Length: 305
Image (cartoon, rainbow, N blue to C red; front, side, top):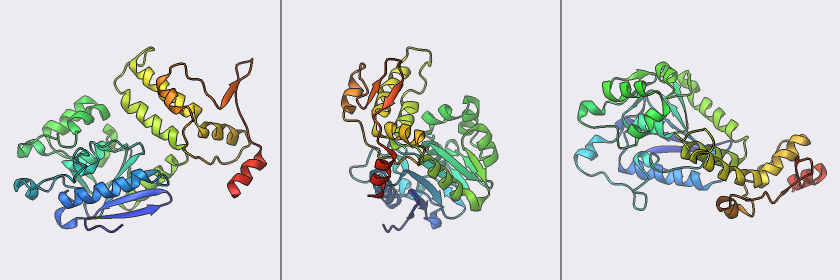
């Protein structure tokens, strides 16, 4: 894929999107939004790419929206993708993890992108700021007013939103906005390292772990509760999947599991029937769950083919 405002790379099952609009401090304009939506859509539909890293060239991760286009009232979203949000990612939900790899300043919409990601790595030279109140706006375009206090303590969120002064990468890490702070030349490598570790897990396990956390956020963890209902419904799918069986067999062999990401044949029933039984397993009288196992020879032959 060739773009004007971004660069893309596939590395060991990880998709890397690099903001490359240096002349505008990587501010997001219409063309960049269109190209980001195309790149993210490609990644989302490619099962071989298990995670996506969003990073930047230059000393600014993202300076927010292109104010020139906003002032000219020329801002528009790509057709059919109007509800994807700022940078084509702040309103759209992705089953696979998004990882921000911040090099330099993340301001306004730059912080909104970080907040929309599942994990974040920053260079030790990075700063994070939401200056919107000082230009008569709020950090609403990317949903940060909704997300921030769910990701970091309320008082810290209020300081970032109301005082409107940037904070260092170290403070962002202490507050919980980013996971790791590393030297600038190690930012992307660290993000890719995290993505590759994620890829060691089964696709459905990653998908439904993420969905459970997000959909049950704020729910009481005392049983029963709506959060427990979400957890139990999704657990039925992962437990009945081929990968759950694969993981058990690989652990017993032991050999490296080969994930398929395939749903159980009764996935639709698992989502709607609370009494769903796991079709690919059986229970012994002692209550121990066992899988229908292939021999190691069969597994190795299958992989060779």
